[in-house]
Figure 1 (cartoon, helix red, strand yellow):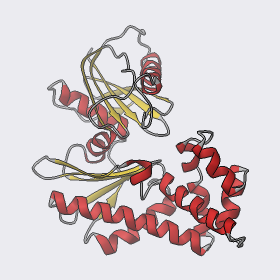
Figure 2 (figure 1 turned 90 degrees about the horizontal axis):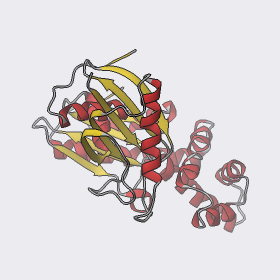
Figure 3 (figure 1 turned 120 degrees about the horizontal axis):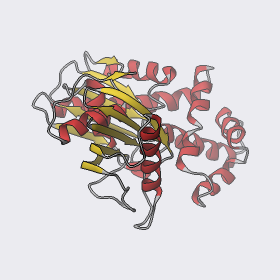
Figure 4 (figure 1 turned 30 degrees about the vertical axis):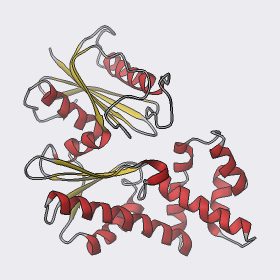
Length: 307
């Protein structure tokens, strides 16, 4: 029995799916965050995350730890063509690393033309044109990008809280930030710079901002609408470059799957992308990577099914 592994490495978690040659998903498993942005060549963050998730999937499938994979594709957040740290040890005949947006796109539309907007801890939009060409927009990291992401929303909320704190001005955002992190806004910022607060921990503030927006907090609502609009603009750019009219758009990631943000994005899309259809992805990023693993081995991918 030939086995195919799809591994989706994000800024918050790593997910693995093990699929047999018939398309049956034998097992799923997860590991820690594996992106290595800002880390050096000795980093084992990616290695540990990928090896942990894949080993758990093999174990849950009832297979021995020494099981060899026919083909594996590992999609990594922020991947730019080369690994920054220590490479994972994967016993696979075929192995490829790629950007996690390729996983998302393959899974979202099953290889058909369309757009995938990933709004997780970070954000990126990717489109597949009818000629099969993949186009990526955004994905420039937490300093220069990530508008329309959980981190971006939380980052801007923290910035607004810092301004309010400096001005000694009452602010619902300031209250939300300090309540969430349990520290003064300036202390929260210092802890991030010192590495005491990880990007994923900052991003975890996003649901509190969405809740305040839903309750009618105007500054919070403005932030949510601004990030929805920024993501819609990236989708518009991707659709234009891929020459997709009235495209199908799959919204993925923790922020994207939050109904409060999805509603805001749906409204923004109406004014940015004429005729866009927002729909659920056919498969998630891990299964999208599994579909790519079939292609990497030169095998037509079957329809996937869960046990």
